[in-house]
Amino acid sequence: MRDENDYSGWRKYACAGISLCECLLFCGLHYGWAPLVYVFKNEGIYGDLCEQTLNSSNLLYKNASFDHIISYSIEDCRNCSSNKNGTAISSTADHHKCKAQDDKFAMTFTVASTIVCAGCVVFGHINLKFGTRVTRILSMTIFILGALMLAFTNKEYAWLMLPGLTCLGTGGMPIFMTSVQVSNLFGKGASSFVGSLSGAFDSSAFVMLLLKIGFEHGTSRETFLIGLACLHTLVAINTFFFLPRSFITKTKLRKDIDLTIDKGENEVLTETDKKNPLADESSKPSLRDSILSPLYIMHVFWLCILQLRFYYFIGTLNPFLHKVTGRNEQLVSHFTDVFGYCILGGIFTTTFAGFVYDWQKRIFKDRKSKTSRQLLPALLPLSLGSGLSLLMSILLLIPRAEVLYLTFVVMVFMRSFLYGIGSSYLAAM
Image (cartoon, rainbow, N blue to C red; front, side, top):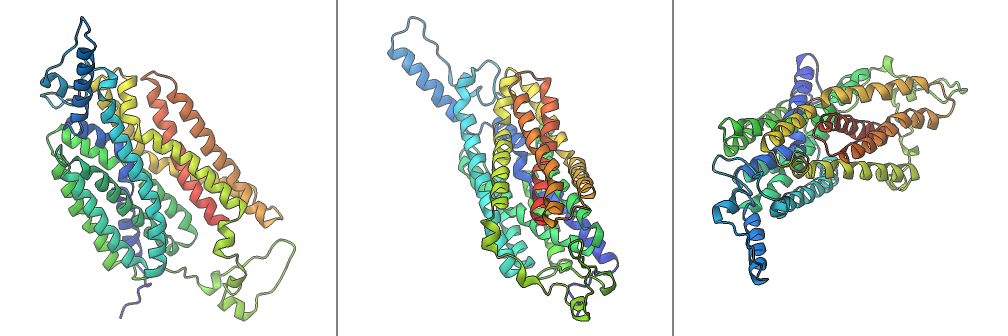
């Protein structure tokens, strides 16, 4: 019987390659919300909310006995969501007339992204208790269910959008979670592989831009999402043929074991220590002590603030583009595409963030204090994440379409420092 941790030869690289493809195709699709909203608006989903708003406004005008009564026909009212050519919000409609529709989409993304974050805690416990295979089987089921619900969302069943987006995001996150362990196969290259996975995760929102492009060229949303659900069999191949049932453990050759003690201490490892380099495992702090430590609490606070800034940007991007471009549909479509292409650049920006962190590690590697060697290298990368978030907020206050290009670039770098450096900092501490 083959050892499930036997990854000699091509099997190691096949597992790594498939894991990267998985993260690029399935992990962070809910971050591609802006292109998805563009498609939904073109299809008139929640467009009835615009009709209700206009009809209510007309009734108020009539009851007030205004001399000049503004009336809209049903066809005009529908134009606030879509016209006969499938173009989304009409440039002749006032902003407030479709605000209810924008609010509905924003609420959908807010609730879904909140549940996705909470789902990470649940899946983390499931992964720890039941292992890789059970976690990924549950993940596959939820992802496929979410893709199908989004595929069959329409005007009559618009409520499917919320559970669909939630399942799509919740089902994608464990794929990344269980793929990180593949880095244990690469020794010194483990950090580079994790960085590549993070970059693929960042860039996965590009898949939703492909949905939008396909939609504009005649491919229906249903066809695209059903095809995506079928393509998810790639995860099953990796789950049952490459990844182990439990975990990929760190395997080190005895000659490569090099346990270093704090500077100034020179101790010779006994033969027992060499055979069991984790003999001092019991001396590590408990989970409760780690969670209640000030450093961890402050890091979670930092992560929550920056993630809230990022989620708000994603959730409100479509109405923001309508506002900045004066509801020009061609410009909205153009900047939605630019956003998607910038997201794809996450593969490179995450690598840059990792380079900055490694550079700082080299600078502080000779510090006497172990805490200093762990903490100080993260100071600059974490500060850059905060600074980029602040810069993005400032750029969003400038109501000019030309500034959007710079805003998207800053957003991609901020996201890389937020998630890539954030997770690396936790691992180091």
